[in-house]
Length: 156
Image 1 (cartoon, rainbow, N blue to C red):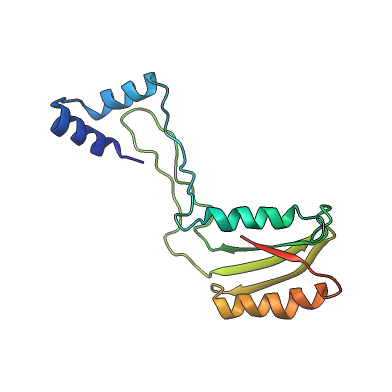
Image 2 (cartoon, rainbow, N blue to C red):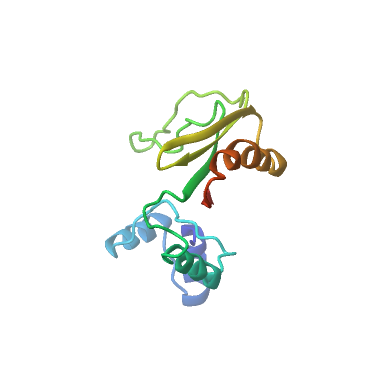
């Protein structure tokens, strides 16, 4: 996750190699390295808790392995910048311009709970969800529909 300018500086300072950004980019491409969207992994990940979680899922005494016990809950949001593009193409030497709004507009957040049978509950609010609002959705609109048997909630 190093920027080309940082790599250029490192090569100059530590290896006495002067190289332009374009030559550095071409060298990296020839080596098979391409520019990609980063895959972010949580630094807080606890490998033991993760292993315990998967062991519990595969325990036939706790789960049927059919997926009926799972409820997936996800939150999403939308404003006028949601569909804005970050990349574009243009001829060499020209900017890739496009017109877009700079005002964010009204912010809406949606949270939905879904099981193998379909949607259990949804809620849309203006603004963002905070912890009490999210907890209220889970308790008031999701758990009350799932009490006949135990279930595992997966939140994204």
